[in-house]
Length: 188
Image 1 (tube, rainbow, N blue to C red):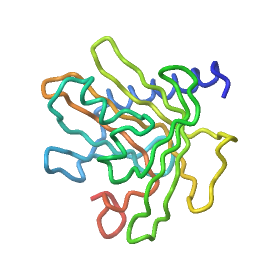
Image 2: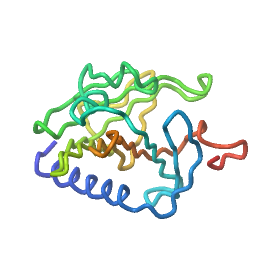
Image 3: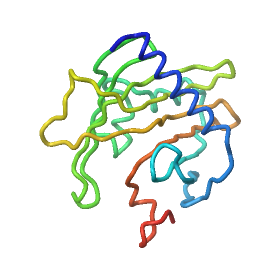
């Protein structure tokens, strides 16, 4: 991918993620427990919802980030049951790359295993916050593969903020989040 275009696109995604993070209006809690709160509000990207998970993880940002970082053979695939495998397909710069995330089947195999190809920017801010900022990218060297449904990520990401208790905030957008919905398909 052209480095200048990748930097432009990923910069816009990072700006959008900051807007999501700073705008506290309209969020409704749908689940809370074990130190984590899941909230939702209507998405401006597609006719669905934007979901936000917030929790406090005790530790210094750089240590906590090791568990969240999008990296080949990283720790996230070891603890996150929704990430089966994570691959860096192209390193554009040290903080900018194209990735492939493979997820297992879900909902008693009603949802097929998926793969997501994203442009990812890792950004560090002056206050010590570390973020990943991602969005779908059409990447011809990695066409859809047999056995996986190609997923589409709207702008999404993760924040690791150095506040008391090391707050880590994960924003994601999905067209299908049945585990967060009540019986009529609306957010719980």
